[in-house]
Length: 77
Image 1 (cartoon, rainbow, N blue to C red):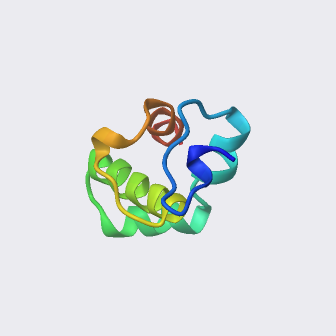
Image 2: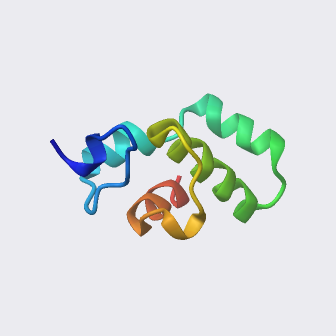
């Protein structure tokens, strides 16, 4: 069991490319929703980061808590 598998999930210290793709790649519908609700690219990135991290962890985190690998993965989409 890993710390990320507890009742209070946390980010793993290292995420594989497969995990990034499986858990943090927004669907077309999620991207369209982000595009329709935000105007600025930076705001859109923050919105999608909150959406995907909430879906994975079940609670909201600050942007400082999100690993760079997740930010970079979502930021290139």
